[in-house]
Picture 1 (cartoon, rainbow, N blue to C red):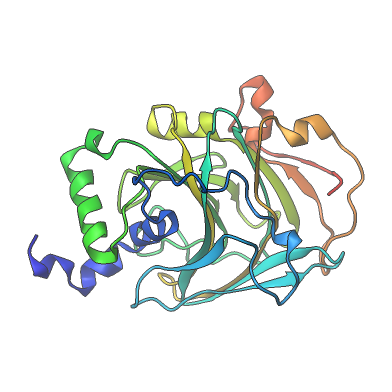
Picture 2 (cartoon, helix red, strand yellow):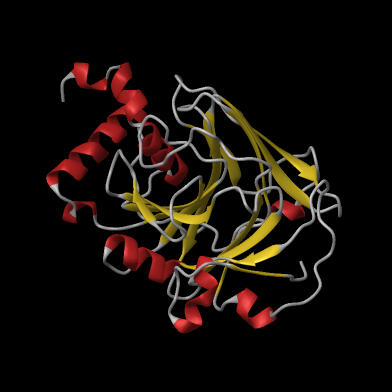
Length: 301
């Protein structure tokens, strides 16, 4: 590989790949027997304190300003992550070793006070999002086509890290259709699923669950292998805007939690909004309508 191909412009255009490669670490290396099979909860930590065990900051590159992440308490005293991006991009991630066949449901909460006006994840020049939940997967890199293997080699050369076989990102988009799958402008091995769209439900805490296996099969046309990491990212480096967002706990379960729980009473959430909870796109999976419009409900934390 020629040195010129690793110049600064290449670094900038590979921003999304650099992120997912750093999130996963040595993704295709043999899995460590000590890799955790569960996600340490943000709510288990102390506001303004250290991140929960295993969570760490991930930089995209030395050319990128970092997003600021910190633990804060919501109005009920629950610890959540606050993300503040100012023309920046970086994330938090945790290495995992999870079999999606055993725990196929992923659950998370987030709150977005306002959208990034110029963001458009179909364009590499505007590829920002106020919130992203990122899941990376193991797989046989030798089965990928030449272009993708060459891309993985460039990421390895630039970062020293191995690019994951595949990555799913759950994002909040401005205009895209709910449930739409957006392929990364950088690589076909990163697929973004629109979990929320538009500003209608901004400023509210929203709960989501998705069936990882169904989403992976729809995005990549095959069954997923082991889950290597989970991460979050709020980024505004492409649009140059500012954004604030909040993330609650992320977890993987054997069965749907929202469908089992049903509607109950939710305790108050952070002002200045009235909080509601959403059965997001994939909670209608019992009827095989994973991309249906979310139905607002109320639910206990």
